Length: 292
Image (cartoon, rainbow, N blue to C red):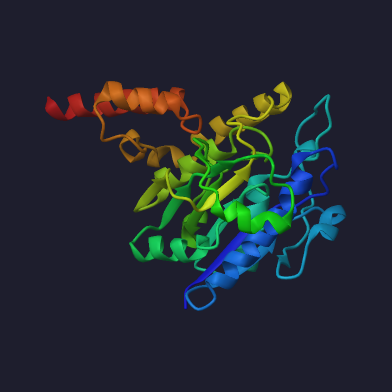
């Protein structure tokens, strides 16, 4: 039986935060989906956490070795936010689980009961990596007891990337720099690694498999200093050994005519238009060199 390992990063959210109510729902939904898939695929549920957040872990989840650094150890900020690094989180999953496929989602992303069975089906279809876009649900859902009602909601589409599934071998080549979570550029960086390195990948934009409580498309702006920090780390990742694997031909919508794909890329917040323009210039230049 195939093994899939799924990791999240729980923390003690302030009672005024929507994450305070979202995390228990996320935990419960993952446990439910694992139970639904038990005869089809072996699912491991993992957490990666700072020592002070271990109290958040519930039965049914395995804790990795505690995180031992945050973005505050790497740069100076006026506003102090102890944000973990995405590479540290996923690397712990890679090191501590022997699962063939790994899954990372943000801690406020719940899953529908068929989540793991559908992941298994997508893998059977030959995909070695894919991204699943979430559904946006009304903010009236704040309790685990409402899960049955949540499952009846189809919600609305959301354009950003926050659920990544990939074969463990791909992670050996991933270049995530020192991107911290909780700030833009996580989805952008993670997805470019998948697009660049996967042999066969897919973006699922319409499936009803993951959800987020709240209809907003974008939350409040991140502190500018953290945004700029992650932006710098993104370009470090893009100019790393990953660079030779980057190609606009591998990006979703690349089969569309040039004007249309530029529009689609421009409307997708998790596809950086500046990088796409660079890759398009490279693609066009290569085309004309071959025509000479």
